[in-house]
Image (cartoon, rainbow, N blue to C red):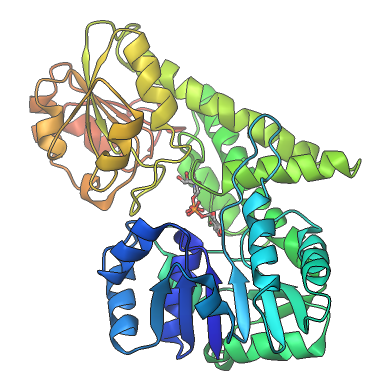
Length: 441
Ligand code: UDX
């Protein structure tokens, strides 16, 4: 099938490359000429494991191309995806749909034969109706359907998520559109990936409900971890104990410094706005949004307490800056709250992140950026693990104790065992787990 993908951001680029890898002919379109030139030269605008190779293979085999010329990609496409950004609108928290509607107008003027326009961007309920209305108004003779096909790609694992999804959601109102989307996803259909076909509004809401539910799960375990700290229990064992109940499930029960990234913070806010507008508030989600905001701030108190009550005049080594490992994405990362707060209190920050430092340098100033974890800890009194990159999981803790002047390690991702850290001579502080000697690890 011929596919046009409007928007070469994270979702558009990964989806476009994966559809090409399924054997479809894909044109990725973006207005940003520098981005398209870079992609043509094989340079990726984001760090995502496996993406560069996937793009290179499919470009060289003639199934994937990049252009700024929307007309050339859209005119002959069977399916046009809208995968442009839907940032949080300044001031009110609503999703900003300017780019989606602009894309709809552009598509309307270009389509010739029957075309399916599919929103892949995360859009509030009812956006598909508006896209349909725009196309009808701009081109009353157009033969088209509008469908919703939300993505569930995790950064850092996006290609695997695309090729081995738990399910595919298709919101469409005609058999013709459903049949075409089944054909598009045929390689997965043959693998027996469930395809859930719904009306468009339901599909749009499924995306928000899924992300909000996961955010609630994280918010819940984070609060339970505070309770564990207060009563001397172990949050990892609580998570294991409840997660074995199949109704709960073990995923997304890792306590940490609060969720970040491009999706959960934005989508929970947008869902909340939609719900308030519909006079049907999602109070659980509202509570989690606020708890997650506070969570990042309370991490600062933990670090200050671990430092003995003050960080003034102290050098602190921060390991990991991105919102999660295997990405260079800094959006809504806990580091953006924690690092400036520590600086404000008089600490000087040394930092290392395997992929995120270029992005971080634009957002976090007056930080000494280091070449690796050991260089980062040199001269520091304490270290704080903010992101659970694999390369931080097996650091020599005895060497760490010998390097850090006050021997303090604050592990906000619970990647080490309290006993092991204690045995290495570190004063170890993690989330929701008793220190050795206080209770069983
Ligand atoms: C998420 C969804 O998983 C994906 O389906 C959706 O389409 C986009 O948003 P992503 O933001 O890439 O993906 O990352 P994810 O792995 O879901 O993590 C989000 C945040 O939650 C991170 O800040 C992570 O550190 C945090 N998290 C995740 C936890 O604190 N605990 C957990 O148990 C899981």
